[in-house]
Length: 144
Image (tube, rainbow, N blue to C red; front, side):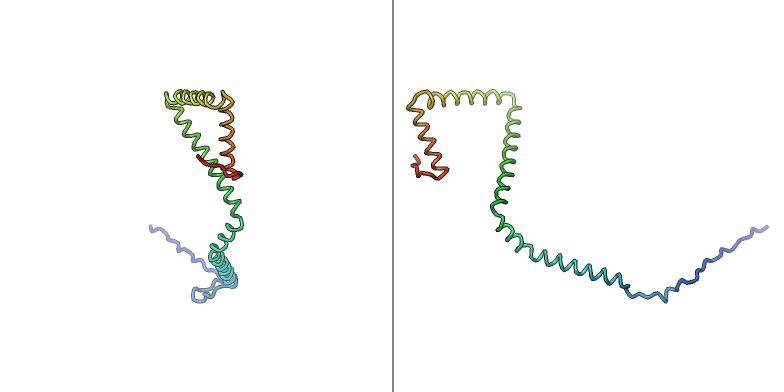
């Protein structure tokens, strides 16, 4: 007995156009999309072309606030870096007590040199006022 083989029915749909009859012209929406894309690229190109002029005028107009913000960030980074270095030095076993002894010794010398006698205190005040004048630009003190 031979098995019966059924032939597959081919699916045909009415209303489907053959490949030869498909129109290859772009639709209206595709043309609008291309036009919008072209306008967008023109705007981006114009913006990038004027970017150096825009940045220089922006920096010229806001120079002081930008420099101030940059200095604040630099100071924060410097403080954090200094604290990290000090923490790593503190972790070395003998350096921490050594630095404390050096600090105590310098404090004792400073008290003995400038704070015990009235003549030395007046010398310290005059040195401080001279330095303050140099930094703030008040009086033109001589630099020794």
